[in-house]
Structure formats: C-alpha cells, structure tokens
Length: 470
Image 1 (cartoon, helix red, strand yellow):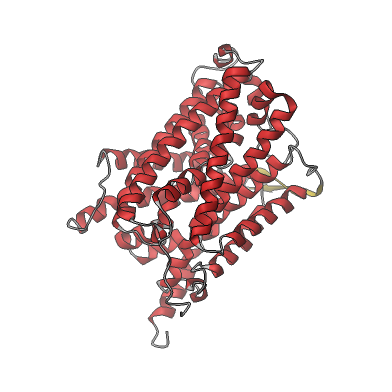
Image 2 (image 1 turned 90 degrees about the horizontal axis):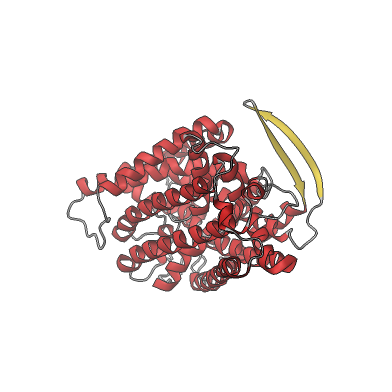
C-alpha cells in the first residue's frame, strides 16, 4: 500500500470517542487552576461561577461543533470546517497556529503538569539553570531542571504509543479515562464524607475582598477555567477515524461535555469545602515549585500525607490520558493540510502497517518538547488559549456560512438552540479575546506574531501547488 494514498481507519467506537472527549478535556487544569482563579476574583462563589460560565461556554461550542463534525466527518476537524466555509487561507492559518502554538503548547503544558504532580512523591526539585527576562514591560521567569526533563520524556513516550494503530490509542484512552474519573470520585467522596477540616463556612465571602472584583478580573479567572475545559474541540480532528460519525460524533461531544461540567463543579466545590479560602488562594501550584497542588491538599484532609501522594499519582494518570488524546487528535491537523498540498508532503503520509500519521507525530513531539522547555505552565496556557479562541470564534461562525451556502447538505445533527447558542458563544469568545489582549499582553502578542508568521508559509505552499511541476 502506498503511504501517500493510504487512508485512516475508522476504529473508534462511541465509547472510545466519548472517552476521547472526557479524557482529553480532564487533564491538569482543574487540579492546577484553582489558586490563580482565587487570586483573580477573591471569593469561592466567583471561582465556582467562573467554572460554570466557562463550562456553559464550552458546551455551547461543543453543540455547534457537533453539527459541523457530523456534517463533515474528516480528519482535521476545524481545519476542514474553515476550509469549507472561509477558504484555504483561513484554514491554513488555523492549522498553522494549531501546529505551532495551540496544539503543541497544549501537549507541552500537559507534560509540564504531569511533571508537577510527579514532584509530589519523586525528587524532581533540581533546577540547573534559571533566568528572568523583561519583555513588553513584564518579567518572564525561565528555568531548566529535572521537571522539564520528565515533561519531555513523557511527551516522547506517549507520541511513540500513538504511532501504533488508532484502536490501540483509543483503548489506552478509555482505560486512562476510567482511572482518572475513579481518582476524582475518590477525592470528592473522601472530602465530603471523611475530611477532618471540611466546613461549609469555608465558602463564605472573605472579609478583606469586595463582593464583585470586576469583569476584567472575572474574565481572567474564566480564561484560567477555560484551560481546564480546553480539548472539547479535539475530538472532531480525529473524525476520520470514528465509526458511524453522523451518530457518534454529536453524542460523544454532548455526553462528554455534560459529564466534564458535572465533575469540575463537584471537584471545585470539594476544594472550598475542605480548605480555607486563603490556603487555596496562597497556593503556588502552577509553577515549578515544591508546593502541592490544591487537589492534593484537599486529599490530605481525609487521608493524611499518603492521600495526597496517592492522588498525585492518580493525577499523573489523568495528565497521561489528556496527553494521549491531545497527541492523537492534534496530529491529524497537519496531516489533513499536507493531504491538501498546504503543508510538507511528507506529513501527509501514513504508516502502511498501522495507518498512523507517524511523520506528523514525530515532528509534533519534537516541537512540543521545545515548548515544554521554553516557559512556565501559565505562560504557555495563556498563549495557546488566546490563539485558540480566535479560531474557536471563527469556526463557530462558520455554521451560519455553511447553512446559508449549503442548505441542502446532509446534517445528521442540528445544533440545539440555533442560532442563539452559537451567537452567545461568539460574543463571549470575542470578549475573552479582547480581555486577554488587555491583561496578558506578552502572551497575546506572541500568539498574534506566531499566527502571522504562517502567512508567508501559506503563500509558499500555495505557489508550490499551483506550478506545473507539482
């Protein structure tokens, strides 16, 4: 079989696909973002409200993507939707930012988060090089140590696993998803039934903070929560490998996101029930430090020191699951671009035995490893989220274009609440983009520069594919 003409296998069932949604979304954010969210808004109620708002926004996006994915069940997901609605140039810029920023940075941050959890019970505190840099009026902290080495190692390992058949990746995803949900259930049940410090008084408004912190700070907290929900858009990227896609893609997206919202709200409620607000707010769990994440502290309240370390191991499994799903899905975007002649042709080839895009997986692993060495957890997530949400809004708007231009196209599923649901998603997404430009200047500018860097590359590939020789 020719590598260039080999086709992807439709090996993912409804259960596998739903596990891909849940497993990719639940990664590290829900365990690491409680502290910066509490610092931003200053009260448990507003932190919980930010999680609910971000969940509803993500669900609105998933409802829209469900229609698009069922209508066009091809590898590449958003790249395919944008190509059909806005043309090759916009689709290429999405694929470029997904490869160079959003997708690879997501993989990098998951590897970074996994290293943070491992440091709870392994001696990974060694730092060999540390520097501070000033950029656009902000100080950026960079360091290189044992945790970065672990992050790179796990990225390479999980990328190697995904070089096998998609059925292997799907089964691994299912097992890791079951394990992570069981671990979260253990924390929630343990806190509500056996925590020695838990009290509902922890959820009261702190006396030293205002009742409302303002829309700008609430947007900052919501952006942090959206990192916890990020990944709901990944499953359609692997739509070319889903069985009965017209039925399974919408069901997996909707069922998966409803389950994730319920899990996130319960887990964050148990944090504030188990721990004083000030302890959560003062936690330093999102950097390369020795402090335990908030989730581990909550587990300590009912199971002692062993509980925190055991849960840290469960969270390693969670990060592995999200990493596996992210690697699987994101590699399909440059693959689809290469098949269209808009990226390096070698990346459009499949391994003839496993039918996996091995070249894409290898290049993606190398670049994600570079990003894992380049910045802190929060800087990476803010950069990728800003870049990603520009295209989330654009993809969601494509539903209006496609309904107008292709009214008779087969749509096995139609968006619930259309047109209100996609319009609300677009409005809030634009507000988040503007808010991030104001509050995260370095990350926003970096994201815009990297997106713009794709323009000359698009012109190069477009010219190459239009010549007689090609």
